[in-house]
Image (cartoon, rainbow over all chains, first blue to last red; front, side, top):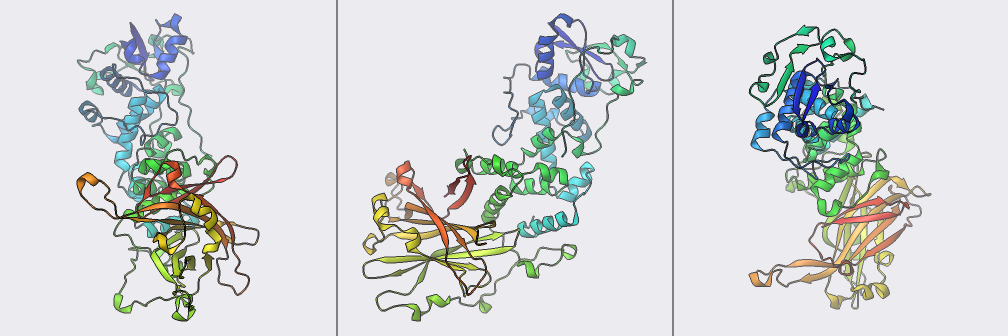
Length: 159
Length: 376
């Protein structure tokens, strides 16, 4: 059985239902909208580029066991496993991966979301706060008092 | 308060139009999605909509544009304390998200044996105890780490270049012998006080003070007497408080728990940890301090007999967790201390506590009672 998905920019993709159902949101919508399966499911926050990548990911992982719906997910308890295909999949630029994370979050494709978040974390690891700010365009909005505390932390931890 | 952004999907065709009616502009998908070529995905339409502003997707400008749940997911990938700390030093949003709950999760990940089952929900947003626990644990394992200078000598943040490391020149070292340990303090029937094992110390980064405590003992003919002396550094001469063994030892009860304080026992005792809680004071303004004392046998039995390796380990038979309230400034007035003692008998829990390092964490349960957690 096929399911049609429509990206925010109007691209329409037809995929196997079991592939689409890796998205928790789509799976739930398919249950609710059984009578309207002829219509594309619009994904208003997911562009065509990202949707294509999400589908590519889901196609590859279509037979993987489902991840429990754990809202209090912590990768330290259940680290996301990456095979060689996943490592190749994540060879994209930062902006693309960020869009993919948003798309995975929006569609609730949890394995992809965790993979993307791990990718982002791996970028940040070992970076100084200044480097993180520069790379991700984050404003240093600490008050002087907070700055003082942070300086003390740095002094104390030698980090 | 920063709230998560709304990324919920809308119902299909809520505007009543079919896709073909909403796609005025056509582009080649190949341009931006080579991955689709040769894939099993069937492309039905190659159009890109740009006219409907409500459907225009905003590109991320910053990491902080992510919904909070994503930032928390990213944060959960930091397995090293220093990564988590740096992340929290980036901006106020990431600092707020890296709350004590996050540090607790990090602790549970780093020390799963002792972190499991510890609930800290009640601590969220109130204290930084878990951040301190994680960083303290990390720094103690870092061989090269040395405590920084005291607050009085720390330069202002604006002039900091390289963190100053303390250097110890043994030629200039001063032998410290607290007054109460002078030979004159000894009596004819007892030896003089002597330190047992290394001191335990705790630095509170918020008030930037360090407590240092020593377990001390002196021997009588028929018994051993212990005490704990607590100093507020840098004053090693006058203790802030001296906790006599009568405060924690209950020989009549302890002997039934598997330990007696007699010379024949030839046991060992050690002060394992001390922790100060400057924000926790009693009605008299005295500061809460928690000590861990361990008593046990010196065990010469091989750990693994079949290996033939003889290892000398201290097996702790009795753990005393002493919660006291002390005056944290030197004063000539009343130096009375108050508090309570909890005795832990590891054997009764089918546990064997060995090793020289014990860390203490205390948390509050639902009934606001203190629960202690030890790390060996």
